[in-house]
Length: 94
Image (cartoon, rainbow, N blue to C red; front, side, top):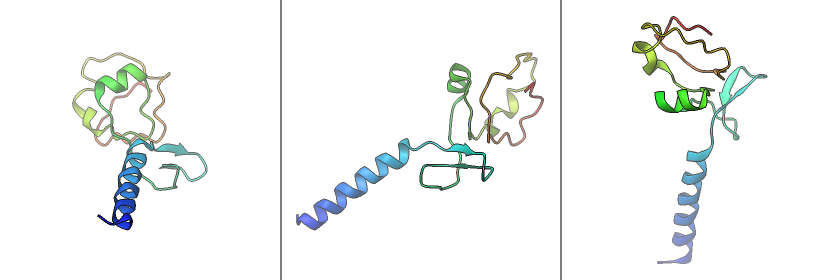
């Protein structure tokens, strides 16, 4: 294998790893969820991660449509939900 191909493979692998660990954060100036390179997007999470961390910043929470409001009287005022997308999830006590 030539050095150029090896370099390209290493670059591609390390680039993929860094992209995967780059979380989207809510940008107050643009009103969008952006990563460190300025790309827009959403973070994925699970219900257990969301409950454990109380952090759904820039998360796609549309999967919660069957969870929120079903006798759940919790308040979410201390949770970080900036930029989160709820889809059809409703009845939040935020």
